[in-house]
Image 1 (cartoon, one colour):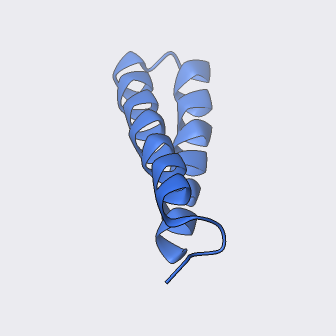
Image 2 (cartoon, rainbow, N blue to C red):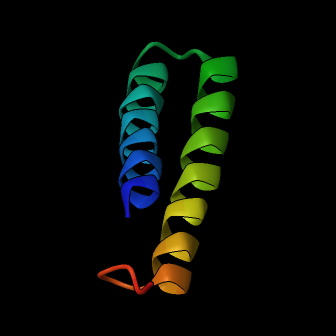
Image 3 (cartoon, one colour):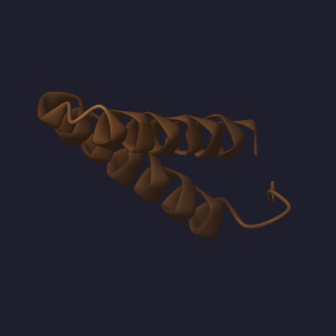
Length: 57
């Protein structure tokens, strides 16, 4: 369950970075922030679906 929390927080922070990069018109930052949000968001969702909520042992 801790892994889902870490992945989720990383995705949320990447979304804030994406918004900041869009405001500053930093296109390389937009690319990396979008990629980070997409990957970590996907990992969080898939880990949650596979492990269940709460985590099954």
